[in-house]
Length: 152
Image (cartoon, rainbow, N blue to C red; front, side):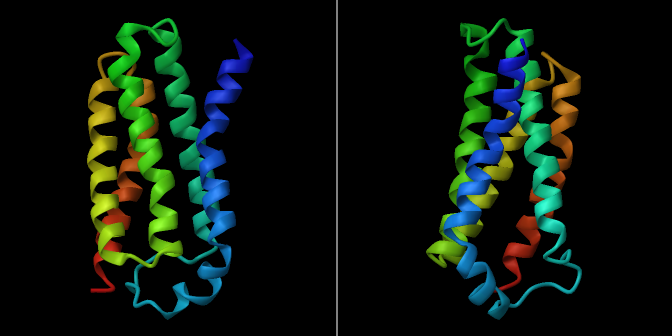
């Protein structure tokens, strides 16, 4: 059972690393030109926060997978919602940093936040621990939603 746990915990990091890699120049050149709220965390906090969030969501998905006996019919909705939010998460970085589509990125992150909420609702009857592992992620996304409005 170690391999699924490690794989599912590592999976969210792959998209995060890839997104960071393909947009790394924009983060240094374009992003500093944007208007940001004064209460926004410092840039150095983001890699630490996202490492914790990706690890928590990945391990939470493993707990759901394990509790439901793998990729079964019962796992379709909870893991399907998880996969959807993960795809939305991975898509945000190229939309925002790569394409500089601020309005689209705002709509996308609001959709992502709602999808994480739906994922949590579907996980709660299965594992309260897995659900709680997503709570900091939802809180961070709410902060990002508010901060994404600032450039307008």
